[in-house]
Each structure stands twice: as structure tokens, then as C-alpha cells.
Image (cartoon, rainbow, N blue to C red; front, side):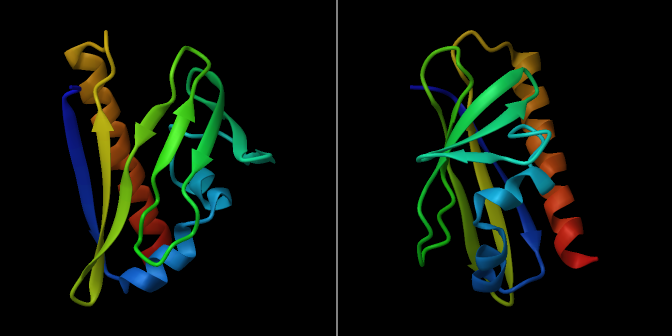
Length: 131
């Protein structure tokens, strides 16, 4: 069992509207710095991009009515990394939640950096949607 941490941020926007705005893979490079530094390019059921450590391939869950935005990241160094993501209604607003699983051989310092990066990315998403 891998240790995990869920990072959550409230965005003052209806959850369905929020989900419908951000679920498309092409939207992720606008805010998710760990997924790609440039536009993602579709290749069959995968999307290709350039992550912080080089080329990556990403699989996204299909569009759905539940706010599920899970994705699977293949960095080319072994198995895919599962990243659960949800948009959840919170009265008139929404919470966006991303769970990080600490991968084997990841130091405490590196995992803390990953959590901080996701927190900043969620803040970037909020800023994009509320300014």
C-alpha cells in the first residue's frame, strides 16, 4: 500500500460548469505543470506531452456525469502512475481534489515537493477560472 495525500481547493463555481470547462485533456497544460509544458498531442487513447523529467504519455478517464477526472501518467520509467481527480459540488461552489500516491523510492522531500506543486497548480486553475 502506497502512502497518499489528497490536495483540495475550493473554486467559487458550480461544479457541473467547472467540470464541463476543465475535463478535456487539452485544458490540462493551462494549469497542470506536472503534465506538460506545452500542448498535449493525441495519439490513440493516449495524449503525449513533455513533463518535468521528459516525454510522458497520459490516459484520461472518459467524460462522465460524476466529475471524475482520473488520469494515468506513463513517464517511461515503469508502470503508469494513477492520479485520482474529482470535481465535487460544495453548495454554490466546487472542490477540486487530487490524490497523490507516494511512489516507491520517493524521498520525503520529493513527495513534499510534489504535493506543493499540485497545490500551486490548483491555485493556478482557480485563478484562471475566477479572474
